[in-house]
Length: 334
Image (cartoon, rainbow, N blue to C red):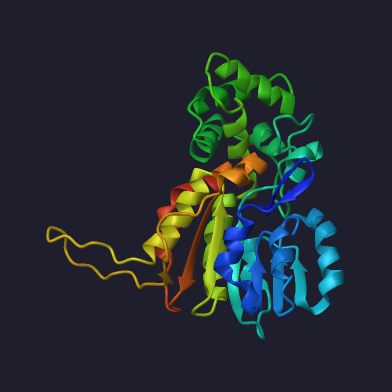
């Protein structure tokens, strides 16, 4: 995933001021930026000469922005072309990490590069690969069964008309290879009389992007990896942009921060070990001024916690969303 929203070629790191205020880089430290993108967060953190940043991004194209920081900050900045689920592959032996940061938005550079096939405005072959992928959305539409397409659209896009759209895809691909324009036409034909503020294709394209990039698995194991990377007292901060990813982050933070209420009607069971301190339950959202300046930021939510324990087991977290990771593991039928 990419770390920033870019509007009309201007650079807009979402909730930048709010994030900087909670991670307190003015006091110096080492930070991991798990979604480097165009480097908005990393640049701001590196303004303090006492800071270091280790940045990750699965999209190799962002090295265009990373190499500038490699040049300007030398030993204070390192970049790795890795998925953030691979955070524990980085050698941090001599680093005491102050905060790990995730911004789960994707940039307009990805959207506006029509060769990447993220947008329903793209032309030609479907793609949607963010980097380090097993397959593209073209292969999904070409090879996935009707029932599996239905599951992808329903659970990752919350698309009401998933079943009909999946059926029409199967029918269409029997006579032609479906490209981006064809998929948009299929969706429009199903939803032509359905009014929505969003483009008809938004939910299906979101679902395909999540499936192709295994975004649910990435987030789950990225959060666990970040926990393992942080020392006690370190902060984990995440900016989400849609309800599915926010639901995952909210559960991870809240479930391992608070003791559950017990009931006299329910047998006593061992409580979860408290892993985090949750400073505020409600997420931080963009100001009206930021939304005016950068409309895509309107759906952003910033949540953060402080690590208080090293001995935590996250099996419950993994099992909670297993129905979604199982969908990400669906195989092609051809």
